[in-house]
Image (cartoon, rainbow, N blue to C red; front, side, top):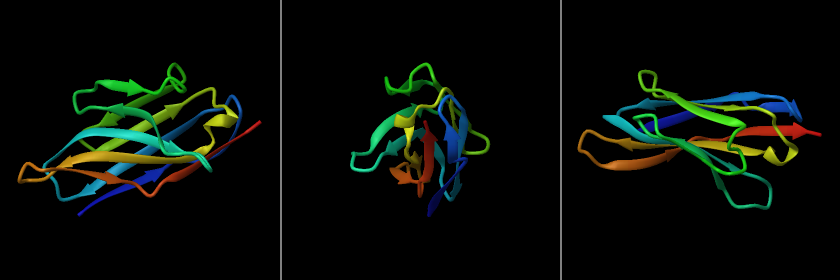
Length: 120
């Protein structure tokens, strides 16, 4: 079984910064893509950023230029540095990982979510 544990959420004023972390643990062979999604009240879950095992990144237009996704493959951890935060960034942030087991099958796992609240 694979577990993803997120940390780093909280309350911040507009213009501030936060760094989210998500560590994967359990039994697996490797991790392909790791990513961050968010869901605001009454809205569907949306992509924030993803990063491949080779370091290729992809960002939603809404966070591009303000956020940086990175990962430490040795620690099976993905990070999301968010700067110049806006009230519209308020949401529950979820990490996910496309995990490959020792049989070569890929499964997507999700973290439990961490609340980010940006006050105006």
